[in-house]
Length: 492
Image 1: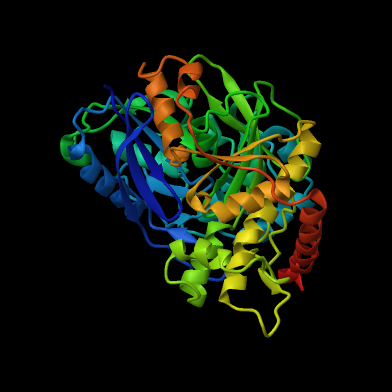
Image 2 (image 1 turned 30 degrees about the horizontal axis):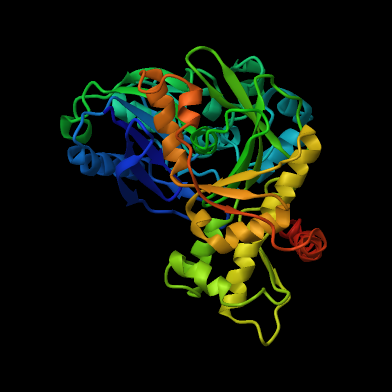
């Protein structure tokens, strides 16, 4: 039975996962890496630590397998900007992470100069520090990175691919479409966007289909155990999760509850017009040339708020305590937490919003605060889904949920209550890695079609609404009041 490996290079760590022909996990390995916060609002990673984590997980996983892998796929934290030297392979600066806010003023300058309309039309994105281009510009203008023939600029997938293959500099459309430099309708790097952003296009990677051969693993990877294995799938983490959830038909929607949360709806093969408050990206491109686009609502902080409860406040000792603690009280007793630690994403796009807790009384305890964090995940998702339904003309009739926090039954029940639609959790919840494996295996003939992949999706649990629309609306109205108080805070 063929085996496919997926490398999931996320925001806080790297997971390598092996799956069989049925999409069943056979084994995995995980390594965390450090988060660096050199100034308020700045978030950085060491690219060498990311690659070390990749090597460590592969070295642990591959020897445990009975079969030699047929293919390797990569999925990654998107928008994070990496600069390295093509000649030496060494990073030229720490990676600037997608959560980083240092380029907010640069985005304001571009908006004031009148670039927003073109950016929206060509990229499907907005002018926000979230995306890669202003990070690349900062590296070149303030980070000491010199432009020249040896400069490579890319996102984390490109950095991992470069090291896996010993020098292939490439990416896929799902990642390219998150840079502010890629025309999603024409599907190519855009010289006018590059000029506007102040980013040269020559150091950028070649864009190849998400499912197709990128190169072969070099001899030294995983102690030589992967030498010659094709790297045949790449997708940004959220698009990979959409693929792994088998959302192959237009209108199918998923939400990944990770460090942030990302709601994606498959909107088909035609590039849609820009949508207020939402993003449009390439979901994937297959080797056949078949393309799917996705509408996306990006929520910057969900699981990261649980990390804050643990590491920042000491309210919990481990993330696993969150669900039981939150479920120990029937509600938050009017406490709302707006986790705008890195500004607000969809549908607000306010980089100056900041975190807020309101409704505290003397009776408020740690359980109420934990519950407010979980409820905030459901409220933020409702905001996005409502905007998505309005914009697309397609009402979400069901939601497929995945990501680390989706193990919480309480969260998914609250989500079903707020959306008033069923929320389904799949049996295999590592859908991001699964999507990367599927893209790679599809390219190498492990799977023959999307229909075959869809047949492997299996339900773990489904949650249906337990409260009325009116009851959900009352709670949500309080949330919206709290959001309004958080907006624009850093400007005042």
